[in-house]
Amino acid sequence: MMKLRILIAHFGPWPPWILYFLQTCRWNPHIDWMIFTDQTAPRDTPPNVIVHQISLQAFGEILSGHFNMSISLDNPYKICDYRPAFGEIFRDWFRGYDYWGYSDLDLVYGNIFPLIEPYMKRKTDVIGVREQYLAGHFALFRNTPEISSLYKLYPYYLRVFSDTHLHYGFDEKSSLVGKKLKHPDESPFTHHFSESLGKAIRRIKYHLATSSARDYRDMDVISKNMAQKGEISLFRKDMVRSDLWYRKQHIPDWEIIWDNGKLFDKKTGEELLHFHLIRSKHDPKFRPEPWHNNNCFLINRTGIHIQES
Image (tube, one colour):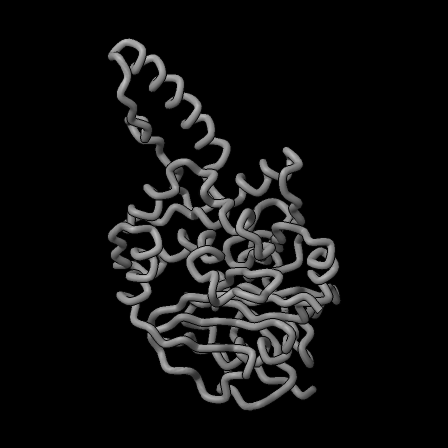
């Protein structure tokens, strides 16, 4: 069986659904998770989830050391921009794994492997769970130096990483966060030529660099464009749902059922890889019931509810 490890960085209190999240990890025993956090491990954390306790400052120092520049994580959400580089930054944690990936904590998983393993066995380079774009809340990458360094195709990735006060959405589709990457006023290339020849060459290099920047501004377009060129293999399919998706579809009475490791849309019977709590996590009316060891629960607009299996 293919080996996969997913890395999550979470700083601040655990969300109220954390024990539900961990239960869904438990039911995916062939996948390993690594959570970097400043919190202590929740009770009864399953053996396939390693909680690595670390301060936000120390995590930033790891990033700073890797890129040899000062990175101050005033806002933990900025970490999302660094996720495409996790395969390189944490290569030692991924040693021996066929695939590495990143994920969010504001979701619950279904039965993951049956939905993705066929594409892993084909050695697909990048696997996404949304057909239209590479989603930052869950993406998988073949654990090779070439695939782990895809993010470097964006010529200004270091400027994205150094701008710690702005979230670019570099791990997915940058337009989703409403902030488009701006090309710098000056070329990143400096050369010592005669003044006239040097200016001409710099203009050419700048034009090439900015054209490349437009084509490779985030991991969504990097993976898509490389796949269109035949240089990597890419698989993207809608395998997930979110409360936001149901809202856009004008479906207010949605229900998601998790039963003995499998996750379904209760009304349609569609099996899901995970369910994303994009809006519910901010809704004070959304209240998960206190967790007790159970193999069935239901998610709807009001919260997470224990069910009889």
